[in-house]
Length: 173
Image 1: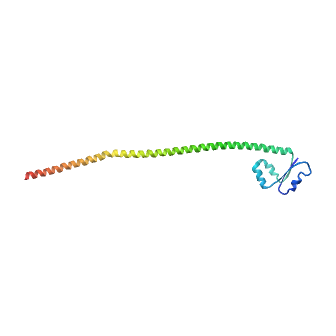
Image 2: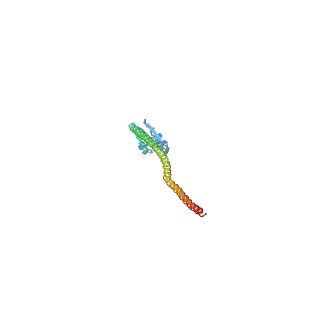
Image 3: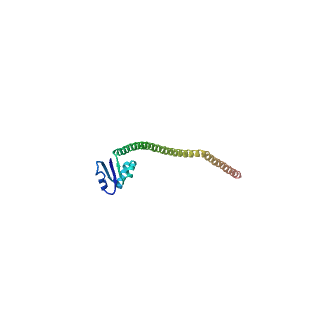
């Protein structure tokens, strides 16, 4: 039989645990720091041991072996779970990187589309100005023709009036 003693009070009870027999004795002086260290390293499987931390418990070597085997199996299970989580995390990281790349490609495409739209808008403005000047050309030409026609009519009228005046002057002289 093995004695496992968890004590916080004094070392005497640990010293007395295996004195009178040939038992294998394990004595652990329990502190809050030890509890935190044990919990962080070994987690849930030590729950039973932590419940008995201030009690003296006598265990057979078989019982200690069972606890050790359970702890080993639990460690293997946790290792397997951690491996699965790490694998899933790697896959998620890979997918996130792919998504980031896709977003970057989309942003570049959007930037390119914006540039194309700006170039197209500039070309449309140039074409609109040309169309406007082409549309205005006949109006300008008609205006010029009208001016020339008026000048000609005025010139003919002035010439006729001057001719009539000269004819009257010549007849009367």
